[in-house]
Image (spheres, rainbow over the protein chains, first blue to last red):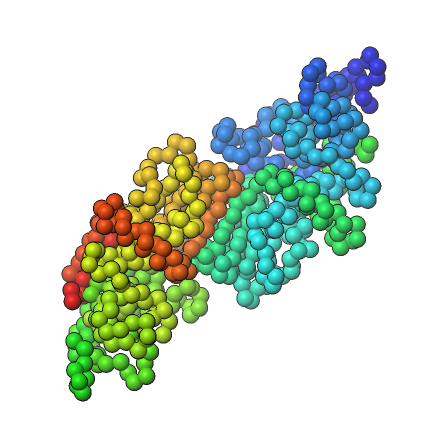
Length: 315
Length: 315
């Protein structure tokens, strides 16, 4: 796949393009799979980036936010550009590297394009992780339990919520990529006669409002995501915030990017648990770029069972 | 005023009574000043409480919450009983004490009744503080800057918000009892071109919603009170909670009762500042029990200028 001596391959690069900014609920037709693009399978002269062949693309709810038009700088992640490919977390193989941390043949996970081949440059290379364990667990797991959603569950639960033995924990969207990773560490209770000490909120809106009324004294809420709100023109109102005061609750919003330094510690804990079968992890795998738009849309209809992945190549 | 040898005085005890549970905006007519009651100026045999003559009564927004009917145990403070006097923070003099921490003649502040004389017993004696400094500052200050609101500002700002030099701080209801105590420690800015690091929220509702959009990365919000919501049948919705996630903001509700152990440290800091004139503190003083209902209602119409106090006796 890499360039042969003296010959630079220019090949087709199938892409999933954002047609135009989305408002409200996203539709498959907001995206388009195009095969018209090509890519030079060679890093530009002096480029310190990484040329990657993509294997797995990850469907994550936050991607919707980047499909909408935002004032530059007003939000934590910029909008995609209409006419350009969608980007998101993925797993791939390094074809050529101008970055000393990676070399040809390395398996990596991080932010990549929804396309066959991606040139990853600039700040995106800083959140590209090398995959050392390539035998005992499926590579696709690095889009989920061993990737960003896994780290999100870990950071949100252990670092943000400071759980103590015996506390009751409620996780919303517990079958999603983040939620199902919280389950091994929590009792999956849905009935809390004595209230909730820790709420890991992936949903926001009405569920958050209901949980607020049931928080216990000195409870903690990890604000991880609000999937119930992402497709609304205006976010819903949350009414029961007085509970935060009356129960001395700490609601802490967090972004997983700020916990990257804990990734090694996280793997040490989770990899053995997966190998021993102590963690059950479910994936919903769609096949090919053509299936990517429907897979992404499905997240917001609750169509996926387990972590939604798109496989675009197996080697 | 205390009992003379062998004679137990039974005297009139004017009281401000809650007529019935309040829903919506409280009115003066929800309360009634009655002079029909009497009190024995003698502690009951074996009583470990404190008999107090009240000097100053404090009008605080949280009192409204206790005037509404609540399910027992559902909130952090119980409802008042219709037909009984309102209670709240006040300053008074000990006439007789069955509690070894207090003796006849001590000046004290804490939860007392809206009446001339109160028998303070049980858990209420635990939040009764002895006033040591009785010369350099007005006694009424112990309903405000040197009492619960002062401690609230101190605990909320220093303990909950962990301010760092150079951070921008916004305090809502900055002319109220708590808000004006925050001012000496904050820049009183109302225009934040670069966003807000710390928000001390006394108001909730629409102000909170607007501030959420203007929080800076890693900002902190102290949830102290939500006066804009106390008279609504249903609390308003707050829409911009996604900002908590996108900016990694910590919203921490707190109750001042849990910071009582810091009261000595607080006094050491604030008393010298008051004596040196470094803190300007404004009181709005109403005269007599008869003026108490209007003084309390005025809080919710923004009628008071400075801390609202009712003086019911001067010695």
